[in-house]
Every structure is written in structure tokens, then in C-alpha cells.
Image 1 (cartoon, rainbow, N blue to C red):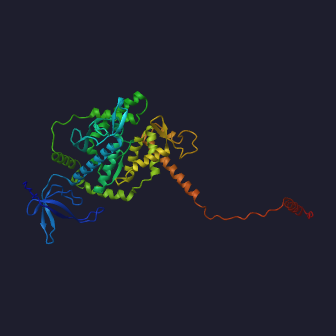
Image 2 (image 1 turned 90 degrees about the horizontal axis):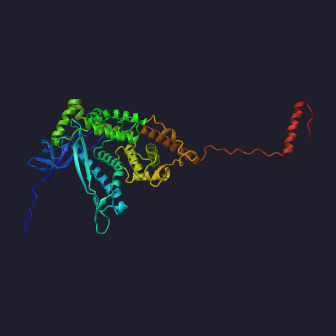
Image 3 (image 1 turned 135 degrees about the horizontal axis):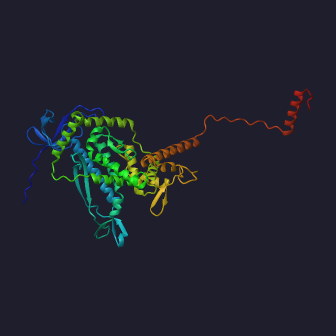
Length: 480
């Protein structure tokens, strides 16, 4: 006979009181599950959503009131966790897992046969090992939460036996950019849903694509954290000058990306040989930021972010117009690439949604709907696998091929993305003009008045009247 030992750990709910914050939820209490440590102490098990100053794993002291509720009165010991850090890591996990699930379901293929000519979707998903890093490779350690996902090349075939085979690595590599934009999109949604923060575009390099940043973050803190980016930016001008001397023109998007990677390789510091715990890293980062910008800038960061989010939501209306999104995506991808594939449209559609929604939740499949609209209405095939923009739906009298965009695409004095935004603005204005014309043509004209027709007079009678009028004016007699 086997004896079953009952779990002696007692879970209780500890309640916290606080003053409601402006622009946040109206509640003034929050209950968190905890494990009892003593008669009046407990260890918090959950991540608080509203309460400041307490995190998962903290030991708190409580007092039991007459109504049976356990109210927190102070903190006995800190776990070293930060509520915001734990929530952000949770958002990172969810966004990463959703992105990998999309790769499994929509991208990953297994190949077999001569030259891998036979390809089918995989069975039972991908084998992925994830390694989490908290710091960048800058000479002086700086915070940079990121994951490295190592995907195994082995996967199961979709046959009855489920035999093992090799992935088609080119299909996954081709969709890396689309997967990256999807991850960013999911991460923004999770952060906004769990913390109420908003996002704004920030131009890192003039003329290049902006990046989405959390609204309200002090730009000095961003510069303090982005020392690695600054090292690359300092090495880039010499590489660009050498490229322009060799080629005779500024680098395009692909060449600029290659030069950026080259600058990153040249300035990459060696890996650290001495490892430090996360607590030691966080203490060092906190002291460095406070020494540079003051304690007020660091400790009031979350408060400023909440205030900035309220301002963003009051100013930005998170609405997606499929037609306008489609022409925006078509214009940007056409100007940046000329000929393109469906995955390029998908990546740009996700960038457009991230900018338009600023972290608000989206309807599933909205990115695919935008891509279908672009493919159906604003593209035509070029060769076997490529397509390009076709704007005859907007400019039916365009006798030349894309004549409206040629001046923009040929202007090499402007950066490629700047030209792309000009083209997107021109097409957006054209869509508004077409819509306005359609509304006016379908609307009945106001204040229409029926004008009665003039009485019909026989031509001989009319000539006689004109002749008599002339005779009368000259003093002659009138003819009957």
C-alpha cells in the first residue's frame, strides 16, 4: 500500500492598498496569491499588475483583519525580481513562441528527392533551443534583453511513418525579415496589453526606416544603452565613403545593410570570459544610469511612460484602412525593391500595422488581408516568381509604365525610404481623390431646378418679326 503525502504548503491571498494612478485602472486594491512562511509572513507567487514596490518572490508581512482578509503592511525581504522586468520577459516569451509557431505552420518545409525537389509542410513542429541573454556585447556592459533561437535541421516528414528528414533551410531564411517584423508586432501588443504602454516611431538614421520605441523613454537613456549602435555608426562613414568612391553613387538598401554588417564586424568586441549574475548586472546598470542622469530619471521612468501612453492614445486613433494600407505597402516595397515577392509585402504590411496600431490588438489575419489586396489590385507578375507594382487601378489613363512614380524612384539625391514615403503619400492622396469623386458622382445634385423650355416659333414667323423690328427702328412701314 502506497502512502500519499499531502502538500503542506499553504497558499493564501495577500491584499495590497495603493492610490489609483491617473490614466491607469481605477482600482485601489490588488490581491496576490502567496505561500505562507510564518504566522504573519508570506512569499508572493504572482506578478503584480497594479501594485508598485513588490515583485514575484518577495516575502511580505501581513495583518489579518476581522473580515478575514490578509492585508500587506511591509516587505520583509526582496527577491531581486522586478515586476516590470518579469512582465517584459513574459512578453518576450509569448512573442517569441507565437513567431516560432508561425514559422512552423506557414513557412517550414521538409525536402527530399534529388536536389530537394519534393517539399511538404513539416509534421510535429520544429526542434528549437532558446538561449536568453540580458546584456549587449559593448565594452561596458549595457542591458539588452534578447534570445538566440537555434533551429535543428531535422524534422519529421508528413507521411504515415513520420520518418525524419532535413528542413528546407532556404524557406526559413527567406522569411527571416517577415518573422522579425511579426515578433516585433506581437511584442508590442503584449506589452501594451499587460502594462498599458504605447509606442512611437523613432528615426535612428536619417532617411532610413524608423524603429518603434516605447513612448516616454528618455532619449538620454536610449543613447546610454545604445553604445554598441554608436560604435557601428562611428565606423560607418568611412565605409560609405569608400563605397561611393568605388561605385560613384550612394549605397542602396542592400548595400547599406551590407556596410552596416561590415561595420558591426569590425567594431565587435571579444566575448566576455567572466560571467556575472543577473542581480550583479542589474545593480551595475542601475548605478551607471543614476550616476549619468540622476535617480529621478531612473526611478520615475515607469511613471513617465504611463503619462506618455495616455498622451499617445488621446492623439492616435488605432484604425486600419485596408485600401490605404494596401497602397502604402505597395508603394514602399516597389520603391525600395522594384521587383519583389509575397514575403516582402508581408513584412511591410506588419510594419504598417505596428505603426498604425501602436500596440493595440489586431484582428488575426489582417496582415494577410492587406497582402491579398496588394497582390490582387496593385501588382502584376514579372517572370516566374517575382511581381512588381501595377497602378492602373488608380491611374487608368497612365500611358507610360508607372509614370507617376518615376520622378520619385529616380531621385537618387533622396534616401530610398524617403522616396518610398513620398510615393506612398502620393498614392494615398490619389485613393482619397478617387473616393471623393465616387461619392460626388453617386450623390444626387442638390437644389436642381427644372428650367422650362422656350416656346417653339416657326422660322418664317421669326424672320418677319425681326424684319418688322428693323423697319420700325428706321421709320418704315411694318409688313403684315
